[in-house]
Image (cartoon, rainbow, N blue to C red):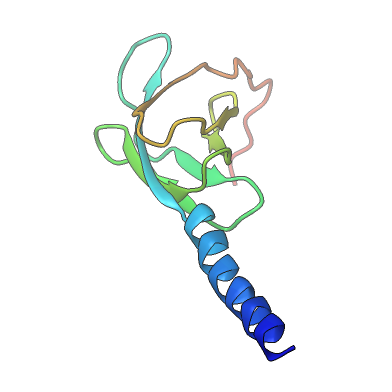
Length: 111
């Protein structure tokens, strides 16, 4: 009986380590560019859906964020269409091309 309990405890102990090892976050990096000009985009928000993890692109359009494999990134900017990207391979460098939202203002109000 003591042997069964000891084996059960060991199984739970080692199972928790395996679960943590499989659920580790890894850094993912990429670049965000304007699809029409090819220029890097500064200040684009890159966040992991369902979490509070967020990164912002630098002056060269680059970002790095920590995610799990299979996570979905949400890439947003005020004047561009939002993009959802599923992280399939965490070793790849992600290249994102954002398209303009083509929203036009009919009126401008100055306060």
